[in-house]
Image 1 (cartoon, one colour):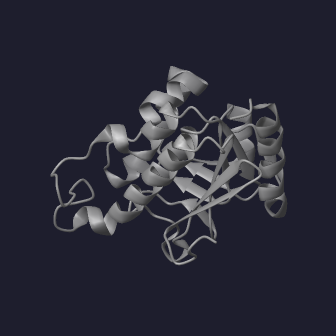
Image 2 (image 1 turned 60 degrees about the vertical axis):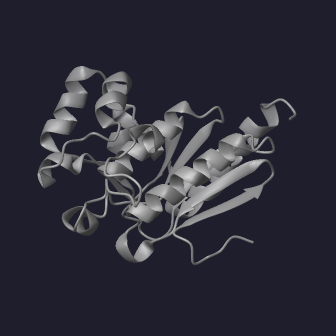
Image 3 (image 1 turned 180 degrees about the vertical axis):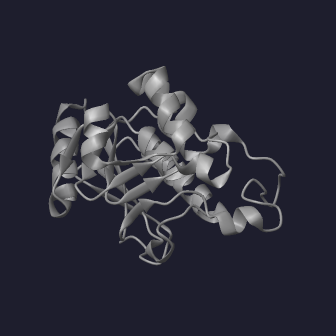
Amino acid sequence: MPDSTSEVLYALSEHIATITLNAPERMNTISRAMLDELTAALLRANDDKAVRCVILTGTGRAFCAGLDLREVRGEGGISTASSSTTLNLRNTPPTVLQAMDKPTICAVNGGAAGYGMDTALGCDIRIMAQSSKLAAAFVKRGVVPESGGTWFLPRMIGWAKAAELIFTGRTLSADECLAWGLTNEVVPDDQLMDRAMAVAREIAGNAPLA
């Protein structure tokens, strides 16, 4: 059984690994510890021969509200680790997602802002709850969008639309994300995980046996 006190939950069933961001009291903002846990969970799923598909989602009313800016403003910032003073971008979740061999589905259960948006964009497939949103909020916080958005967005929606989204910091509703081509489908909130599991089962059923 997964440890419900962990900030990143990991469960495996029917050859599907479900990874859940689990800090709902702060809208799943990414702390340094959570960054490491999420990377480790993604690598675990990628290395496990029993896993044929990965679902990434969150608990509470947000998928991920971005980096924990309280840590960023604190001594050392989020890029500081006990053994290093720089962030190795090759070991951060959006980069790891891009390099994964396993198909990934992001079940966007609520707001995905900044780093959270880029992490969602790093997945192969996005299914959004009707109430969820994507927010390119970097510019409104004076932060450079270095976590994958500047790479993912132009390839998904073209340069002009990507520039519009990044420069304005606009928030898109789930229906707008569908119109822009940023999500595969939008479903009622209470059907999100059922739909994500149905798609994952279809993918897992097509995967070769380990």
